[in-house]
Image 1 (tube, helix red, strand yellow):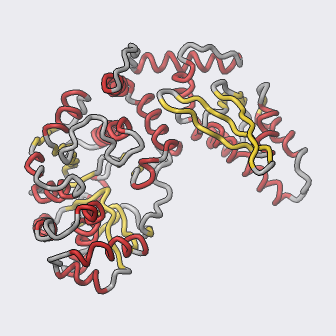
Image 2 (cartoon, rainbow, N blue to C red):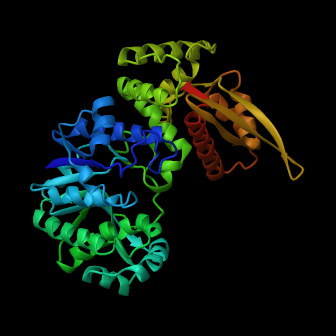
Image 3 (cartoon, rainbow, N blue to C red):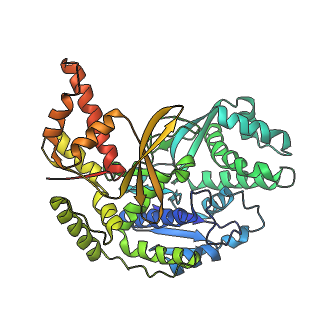
Length: 445
């Protein structure tokens, strides 16, 4: 089963266009990580793109696709907001079993092995509730043509759609029919639908139509996830701290604009694909007119930096040389290490890191405080503190063993019942995990 991806610029040929992301750099980083992870677990990974996509993804970033088709410039008569039309066209071109994977999807296992015998596959089923209904009520009065599958949806808008972060299967005849109807749906409404409706229209000519046609033709759809999600309420698709135990991430919707998620993706790339990260960093510097020379990272260099930081951590003396870079590389993956230590009931050392300062402010006559945490290549992050945070971080300030920290924290706790103590322990462990994610602390044995 062939893996395919598609990138269409929609005539937006400025490298700094963010394509819905928090920043343009995260868009390109997403493509970098998605491709590398797919190639790692699949033999054939092909890209369908336009000339601009080829220039960035292949010529400049040198992403390791096994085959590239530069054919999507043929879609440039379509409005840029009809982003799903390129996916539909790529589905239409397939003549053998395939899986199309979006460029904001990352995998840590083979999808081909899971679905090699499935006729139709998508990521999951979702309920088309309030969000879809609102969009449809804005779109439907302007339609000059509605296929019968969409008429069925129109009569019962509290229905279902397929999330198509992953889509494909063995039933090529179905995809030929589906793409014909989808393209027809778009083409017959391009002149009647206001441009400000185009963006939301994608959901209906791709996701809703796919589900409705499958139901009419009595086709079984296999799902990567059996859970049915409400539209706009996807939880659990962006936890880089759980990789590789979590084998699938999809940075859909608001995740693309979440600075914590975007930074976690960047740090993962920085550590695991350092040479590719260096290439994209140089492109970003060039785009922003930054003349500072960036040190080219390699796997060997990453290993050296992590070793240097481990030594600093054990001595609790940190240098300013590459401090944020070393901190990022060392702490990537550390939340999983913490969970293993906790699960095995092992003791370990906790050290407060450099790279942040405590800030005090007043709101409604109440004094509040937060940590302002420096970040490499981006603005500082903010971590709000409460009384328990203050107590924990005060105990950690000089370095402490985990078991000693827990013993000291129990002195702040009045309820002696075992259930209450267990809940309190779970809370402290969760806070320690958050401190690692925000790069406030690090741990070692």
